[in-house]
Image (cartoon, rainbow, N blue to C red):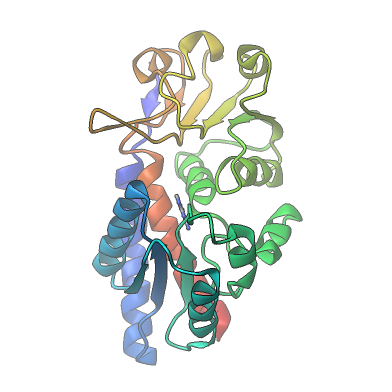
Amino acid sequence: MGIIMDGKKIAEGIRTELSEKIKKIEMEKKVKPTLATIIVEGDEASASYVKNKEKVCLQTGLGSVTYELKKDTKEEELIEIIKELNSREDIHGIIVQVPLPKQINENKIASLIDYRKDVDCFNPENAGRLFRGEKCLMPCTPKGIIRLMKEYGIEISGKKAAVVGRSNIVGKPAAIMLLNNNATVVLCHSKTSDLKSQLIDCDIIVSAVGKPMLITADMVKEGAVVIDAGTTMVDGKLKGDVDFENVLKKASYITPVPGGVGSMTTTMLIENVLEAFNNYE
Ligand code: GUN
C-alpha cells in the first residue's frame, strides 16, 4: 500500500512561507508583488482556473489584476495589453490563459510576454533556458511536481522516469525537468504503441493527459512513484489519469486528484511571481 502524497498540505505550508515573504516585501519596499492575468472569453475551464488563481493570490497577499476580454478580441488588441503590462512597474508577473480563440496566434503572444514576467514559462527565451538547464521561471505544474517529490524525500537522480503526455505546458517541460534532475526519461504520448511496455520498468510515472483510468495497475512496477497531473471533469467531479484505488496498492507514493498536484501548481505560481519580482529589480 502506497503513501498518498498530500499536495494540499505541502502547498499550504509553502504558501505560509511565501505569505511571510510577501508581507516583508510590502513593509520594506512599499510595493505589492502583483500578477496580471489575461483571459479571453470562451473556455469554461479557464474561467474557473483563473478564479482560483485570483483567490489564492489574494489569500497569500499578492496583488492580482484580471483582464477579461471578449471572445472576438483581435490579436492586435491583446498585443497592446501585453505591451502595456510589460512596461508597467507595478506588474511583476503576466499570465495569458490558454486556449485562446482561433483569431489569436498563441505562439506569437507567448513570445511577446517579457520573459522576466513570464511566470508560465511560455516565452521561447524561458523555454530555451529550461531546455538548457539554466536559471529561468519554470512552468508551474512540472515545478510543483518536482517540488512535491523533493518534499517527500523522493530521489530522482539515476531513476527511470516516464512522462505520459507531451503538452508544452506540462508533459514536455516535466520530461526536461526530470532530465535536469538526472533521471533517465521516456516521454510517452498518444502515438506510443505500447504504453504498458514503456511504463512497467519505471521508478517514476508522471501522467498529464486528461484521460481517466489511462494508467492502470498492470502498467505500474511494484514500488513506483505515481504522479497524476491529469484533470478531467466527470459528472461534476475532478478525475485524474490514474486508476487510483488499484495503483495505490502497488505504488510506493501516489498523488490523489484532487488534493495532489493541483494545489502545488497554484503555489508555484505565487513563488514564480515572487521570483519575477526579485529578479526584476
Ligand atoms: N490553461 C490551462 N492551464 C494553464 C496554465 O497553467 N496557464 C495558462 N496560461 N493557461 C492555462
